[in-house]
Image (cartoon, rainbow, N blue to C red; front, side, top):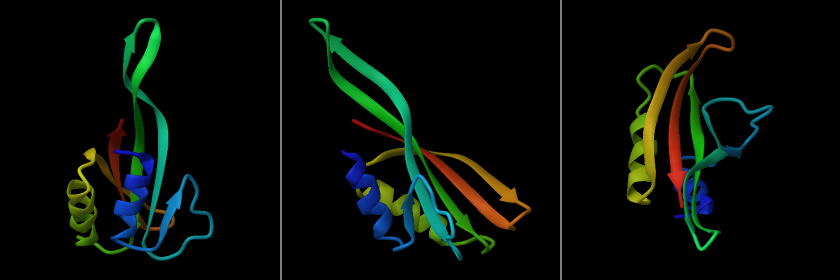
Length: 105
C-alpha cells in the first residue's frame, strides 16, 4: 500500500479530499495527512521497511452521517490498515469530526 492508495480510496467517497490543509473548504470534506513513522525494519545497518502513519479526518454537519461508513468501506476495500481514533463535536464551526489513524508500508 502507498500514500496514493489512501488518496484514491478517499476520492471514491467524495471529490472534496484535501492533503494537510482544507482552508476555505465548505460543506462536508475529508483531510488526510501523514504524521510520522511506525514500525521500521532494519537489516545490515540499513532501513529495509518503514511504516508511515497518519490521520484521516472527516468533517460533517450531518448527524449520523452515512458517509462515515462509506469512508470505512472504501479504506477496507482498498486493503488499508486503519482504526477509528475519535468522534468529536466542534462547536465552532459546528462540525462533527471523525478521525481515523492509518498505517501504510
